[in-house]
Amino acid sequence: MRPKRLLSLKPFAVLISVAVFWIFVPIGVKNKFQVAFYEFQAPLSAAASYIRELQDYWATRSKPDDELLEAGRDIARLNATYELMILENQTMKQEVERLEELLRLPSRPDYRYEIARVVSRDFNSWWQQMEIRKGRRHGIPVGAPVVFSGGVVGRVSQVHEYTSTVELLSNSHLRMAVIVIGDNRPMSFRGAGFQNLSTPIGLAEYIPADINVNDPNNPPRLVTSGMGGVFPAGLHIGYLRRLRPGASGMFLDGDVYLDSRLTSLTEVAILIAEETVEQ
Image 1: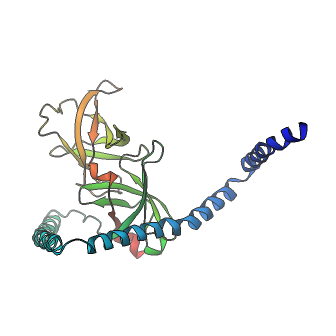
Image 2 (image 1 turned 90 degrees about the vertical axis):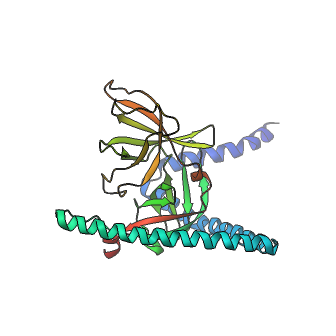
Image 3 (image 1 turned 30 degrees about the horizontal axis):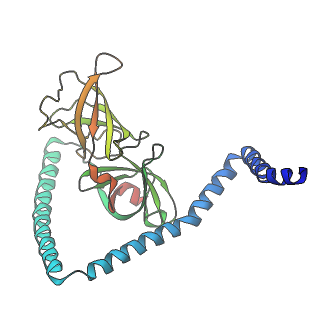
């Protein structure tokens, strides 16, 4: 009986020994192991995303011709709309440059867009992040803002050889200065996870007491302030709802409802400052 009992405890002894050994391993060695393990498994995750895209491709090929023709018409309409928006954007950019020259204001940094596919998403209570299929080989820097058509997605927190990790806007570690449209007073924003496991939310702090959310059909819209030099000014964050007294008593706190598409993005854009490219 005694040998059998010792044999049953052997796995626990091995586990405890490994845990004790890992505690005393230097931090530098642990980081090396972590990076090596991530680089080892990254191709597997990327391959899985390629397979999913191939499945979607063949699923599309199997659709009737009528559906494909209708989808083509929809894409043509969207392309025409986007072409008009590009022309409007160019006109506005020229006007901004003209006003900057007249007022002798310093020009804002230029960015280029690096489009990346989403490999995987992690929405647990700890991480709130996603993996994208672009990394060091593609010139992605740590800290770069990530956006999509609905505004801010998050920022790049880790860069590996072929992939990168993006902290989502709902991540509590992500903080930034924001403003309400039409009001230049800055306030603080940080992620607050998900509400009801489906709605991404954030928390706005230091909200001026004269801001209200009395009209549910027209809630105040938050955008990036441009302070801090990470996110350009004017990027959409979310809508302010449910105000309450803050800890200081002078300002308010409020919930910020973020775009629900954050949970289902398949493609994002990384904003890379031209100064970073030149370096």
